[in-house]
Amino acid sequence: MKSLIKLGIVLGVAASVTSCFNSSKPNYQYFPNMYEGVSYETYQESDAFANGKEGQLPPAHTIKRGWKPYEYENTTEGYDLAKANLVNPLMADSLDVKYDATKAAELYTIYCAICHGDKGDGQGTLVQREKFLGVPNYKDRDITEGSIYHVIYYGLNSMGSYAVQLNEEERWQVAEYVLELRNK
Amino acid sequence: MIIQFINMKKVKHRNSASSILGLSLALLLAFSTTVFSQETDTAAAATETTADASVGAGDPVNGKKLFNTNCAACHNLDKKMTGPALRGVGDKHDKEWLYSWIHNSSALIASGDADAVKIFEEFNKTPMTAFPQLSEAEIDDIIAYTMAPKPAPPVPPTVSGEGGGEGSSGGIDTNIVLAALALGFALMIAMLYVVNQTLRRIAEANGIELQKESEKRLPLWKAFIQNQFLVIVSVILLLLVSAWFAYGYLMQVGVDQGYKPNQPIHFSHRIHAGDNGIDCKYCHSSARVSKTSGIPSLNVCMNCHKNISEVAETTATPDHSKEFYDEQIQKLYKATGWDAENMKYTGETDPVKWVRIHNLPDFAYFNHSQHVTVAGVECQKCHGPVETFEVMEQFAPLTMGWCINCHRETNVKMEGNEYYEKIHEQLYKKYGRKDFTIAEMGGLECGKCHY
Image 1 (spheres, rainbow over the protein chains, first blue to last red):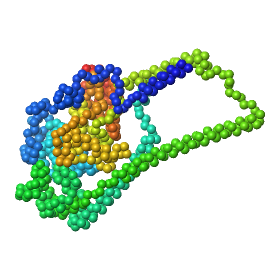
Image 2: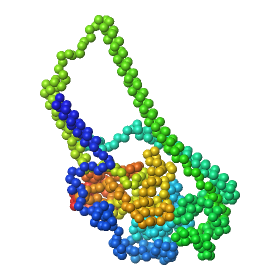
Image 3: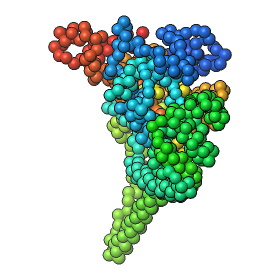
């Protein structure tokens, strides 16, 4: 009889313990101190700064490391200036970093092709599924490397800015690739 | 054996019957919605043709095509976008004015036309792309399309009612099967009882004494206790079984596989990565170049959702209605401070408190770019078929054993990577073959991940 009761208890405990896993809550940890560091985690809520977040924007009048200011403004005049004057530094011979068609195509496929299409004809998946409409064929537009870079940087009309997702070098890679698609 | 058990415990076996049912329901719904959309299409076409008759010039069907390719990037029929809403634009301006505006709006503004200047000022002085390639006939077609009356919104109750009806009828089907089975069992029991009774009666009639079942036999548990061998065996068995359970339980402490929290905004990976085929790295762009894959900042959402303020009818599922998804987009607008009416940011932002799912303890080093960019590992290898997840969850256990296993099995991608040239040569000399697993290259050393 005792063993029967024991069996019952053990089974009961096992059942209750295993059924306790609630998928909307994280699991138990052995020694939480080993898991959760003292330092702030990225994006964490924190009272270290006035706005209650750990992630902060660079303070005013400062530039983050590796970032170069872009001197054209997000206006129609800025667009025209960039279109006329801006040249792709990757195509200059002086630099170590060169235009790399494979890399550029890869980036283009991730960020642009979803709307602009793999061939740049404005027939990306989102256009075909009618989520986005009116994406032009590059061939129909009068664009230069400068204007392409400018639009990647700031976005234009319905297109958003890609300055967050692509760094300066990558933006130039993509700009060159877009020109290639246009001239194909 | 024990390890197998633990693995098994974590695998979720879905009820196959219910999944088949769900699948068939999804199929049914898919068909019903396509039927519906066809109906609305024809209805829209019908209204377009009547509108055509009333306007008297231009072909709205061709107009729609032209509108979608040329105008829709900045204009919507009923909603202010980069440019004004265009429904009924033929009533607002005369045709000559529209021709000259579309062919070259800048020239019209420069000429000092009052209407043109007013619109230019109203829309933040954003110049409209000139369309000299559009002929006047084509512009007529576009105007004809914009003059079509607004189609009545499709009545959602019919759709959802039908879906619900089918859902419940699907439920009834299983219930009927179950009821039939239960009835069958009940009948069988009754029959057995009747047969037993008749047999007994026949035996009684024939004068056969039925053996009464053991009256003096010991109760089962007493007999069990008296048998010492059986007691020992069962105690050992019991201990083994409970050790098995205890080990299984202890080993999953600290493992968050299957962790599936509710997020403040219901973001569906199924819609974005699955249906629309957006690359993982489009949003998680830092996975290419940094240690973390990053939670995308909301401006990445707004790249598309500035224009997509509501989901299509076909996006809705039996679980989540169109209204539900639209509400999520509104939450995004609220968080970013986007005023959809005026197409402007108000500046009042309200950060979204996403719940982090994948979280390695601080003592383990992991770098996304090394795996994603250098090794070219598919995101799905560790994160599972995310493009099918309606709600994001942790797919892999993220335990050390899991990491090590993969490092033992996977070959290092060395071709075309200068960085590996030297070590590749050395390893080639040592092992005499070309492919090496990560483990053979020192990928199991403690200090690689713990320092």
